[in-house]
Image (cartoon, rainbow, N blue to C red; front, side):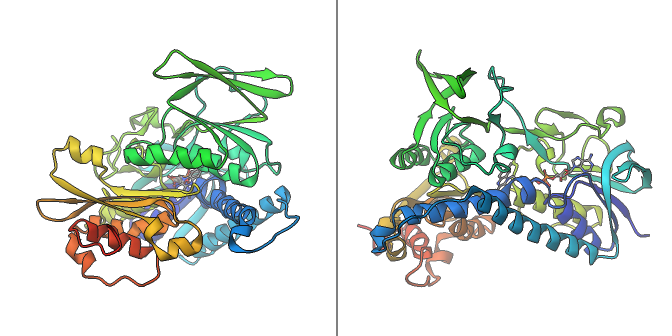
Length: 464
Ligand code: FAD
């Protein structure tokens, strides 16, 4: 008998789950209260990456003379930047809408879903009516939203979230960024290149990453002119004339600083969207980290699943939400999903880019794994130098016992594309030889990865 499945939320978790379920023959109800594409397409990955491109162009214009090009009289048009962002977002949203409508067994329902019980959903439709749907399974994919810190003064005018910043045409003269996670770092780096004076206040630089990376990235930021404070916590935000003052305190020393800016971006984390779903009444357990799930993403109520940012796994990446969506649908439809959910690339769109996958050195030490490590510098890579981006490194870790690749960290040009060779190797348990026997094209950035891997066996050619 055909299974009826409701998917609540059409972000990269929900819409991908809906399509996979439809491919497998289920009857899908995809319910969305805002826009198709969720945070990722509308307020996250895609808008920030259009800004990232603007930032890259601004950086290149600023240093055009290094390339023998004289550029005069360029300026950034905040309105045009917004317009371009909207065009890219609209094109993608329309594409997903068309894709979904091409599946006759997906019904898209615009409205807010509430779960009545494990077999019934009530949708408050956008047209003001309500509709009750009876299903066999429910997949909750309602995502996350920005959380404000407990810092005093976050409700002042000019204190903004990433959602607000992405709608602003104006480039703030001085932007204070509170938060050293992916979102904080990306906005700090992008706005610094777009022309703001950025002041970054970070209690740490990323989580569970290579220690060298956490030291080197702030050094790059400082070189670009960003005022960067690490190991520091914002205590209070106060009005100072028409500006905002942030008082921050170092974590490990008895010292405070005060910084003044036009806008303060709070990028201190995102929390699950669970309001209005009626989870308490139906027995789906959750806390501030998200909905509790087991290894199959099933919640504490049988037949109800939670994928993506809303579950308590804390990963908050679009590609992971999508992979969880595919996994859950295959599971519901009786297949054995063949996806390695433990290995996923983490990408940070700063300038320079940061990407990592698999284990860090810290984790390997903690687990007592006997490992070897090799590092290749982009300064020795021809393509990187021709791009004018010869700074940064690729670091590869492998097991001494069986020679398998265990972790890769990249800081440098196109790190976010380069990381996938590492992801492929680690997710498939490939050993160092499987990479070293593969010829890599010249001149490419991928050669730097190959050289780093060769270095594990002291075979790198361009490494002293
Ligand atoms: P979401 O994308 O949040 O989608 C959830 C959807 O559910 C929303 O559309 C919402 O309207 C809907 N919904 C909620 N409640 C209900 C209800 N009751 N009824 C009906 N609909 C409901 N990740 C990356 O991998 N790469 C990046 O470069 C990246 N950049 C980011 C930049 C920013 C500024 C931000 C904020 C996030 C970024 N992310 C990035 C994270 C990424 O956006 C999320 O991990 C991803 O969107 C999670 O997908 P999801 O489907 O779980 O939830």
